[in-house]
Image (tube, rainbow, N blue to C red):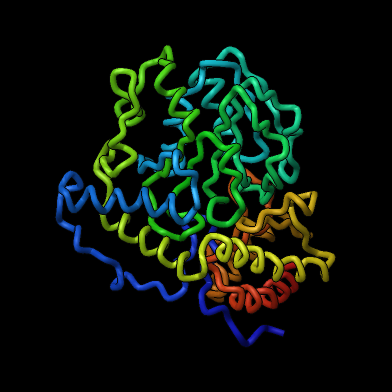
Length: 370
């Protein structure tokens, strides 16, 4: 029968993600609006963004955090263009975004010494075969495949190369081994459900050393330049952004960070995401017509949960449209390059009760469409 109860929030998109529970734009501190981002007020606000990110994530004291243009994509490409080419590169991909980084390295930067470690949707490549003497490029969580890296055992603590980690759908929801990550990027609109267009770049001391000792052979646009006269531009990591940011978006992001603190910190946010995943796991375990795209339970993402159904691609589209028309689940179709199915966000900004209420609607919609 058609369920009688609906989720309080039908926002299960994998990006931009749901706003935090209780969010109200009227509660934002907008005192910096209308001021220059170069003013003392503007720079202080952006400096707080860097400092609060470091504090909430529990970063090592010697790691740098900066706000950069163009979301996670801009942050990651900035790192690739600025630091790759000094040594051979191992490129790891098992979904759309990782394959995008391969395209950048092979067809745009045209790096000559590369090794590819690839897997189909649902699987991980053999990450343990990567070479610690090389730079290693990978996503922590495959947003379009629902497959995450289960641990960092495969990363050598005594590596000579740098690790480049696209963590946009992982950070704030998964335990990140910062001592093994040299370059980490994410965007505000993912796990914290904040606003788009801005990227975050986290650098280890080893990454800073690379920037100050290596100059790539290709020209760098202004938006990618992290050094001047062979030295790191410290201002980028203390609130002096390369281009004009949105101070409203910065205020929104600080609100999201304060909400993480109110939960009990990063571990509480991670647990909330894992508890959300448990709702879908219990549902899938009891049904034959639905399964996870991830082939191994230890690699199952607890943010972008990707599901395969016993339906044709066309019927999957009909199912997602039906759920949207009933206003119980928005934007849960799989990514355009991924196998047809559902993708339900389970990050901490999603309430577990809403997922519980959504599950009977999946049953109803499947029976209606099949």
